[in-house]
Length: 388
Image 1 (cartoon, helix red, strand yellow):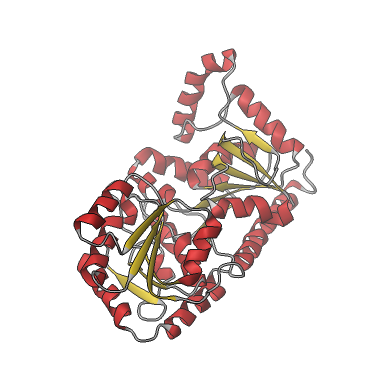
Image 2 (cartoon, rainbow, N blue to C red; image 1 turned 45 degrees about the vertical axis):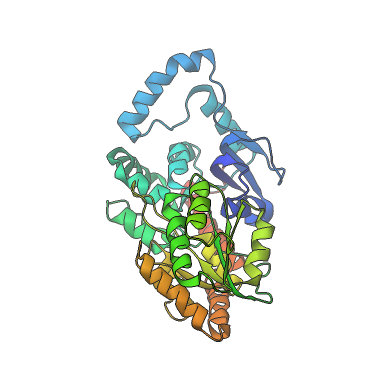
């Protein structure tokens, strides 16, 4: 079995879920189709970059291809002309059995092409593609038109599937499949008492300012220390906020760190904080990988009733949940864990949740089984082995 993994940009260090598919799916029998390639390919995979310079003929043809796509597919993303021919040749040369498009917007690019080549196509819904994107009537129409072209779809949370279903985007072969975590690498270590950690881009839907204000209300002047890992447009404002609130000595902003350093921080941290909210443009999480990694490291997780997070965090068992934007409630839960004499039971519950629900070896095996079955059914439909 050989899979083509379709992504927008490659290689992106933080997209651990995509990188794991590229490196490990079907024993590493994969190739990559990407919109943009930054020149770094740590897995040394056969790679096709879609967004190349157009030939003279294709520049002339581009407006007509875009119009055709908009009329019949509700998207102008479909490859055309020389680019399409080269992509078809690449997939044939790689003897691809199945295409997995990471994010629904990438599936729009390859669904029809896969059909034309008789290659089953799946999409993996992860967040923005099944939340913010649904603000567009055209995007919803393009998704609906795409459904019959897919062999199936996966989603990191039931929340996203429900989101899609609410606008009429459904598929009979749909599965909840969290991104997962390597529970053999992400493990608890000796915990530093009253240590707190937040990981992620400093952007609106992570509400880092709410986390800082809530932490200041409950932890100011105590032994508690909060580490923020991540960069983004709100980083400098958050640094200034910490100074304004008088907790700059208790909060460390590291900027972005390599994944292995994030793992080391999680291993020794008692409490993980992530106050996820729905952004003004409708953008939501799917089920954050960082929360799954925190659970694997035995971190008591404080978060929000947002997107797929309640599918991972059981209030009072392996963490605590508050409503979005409930700064006082979030602060109260921080105070609760600071007052708890022993977090051992919750730490064990967090680890158990990760082992039973988010082990990426188990989840990858399930994903491969679903994809294999689709390839098998496709082979039967074609009356035998597909010829390249």
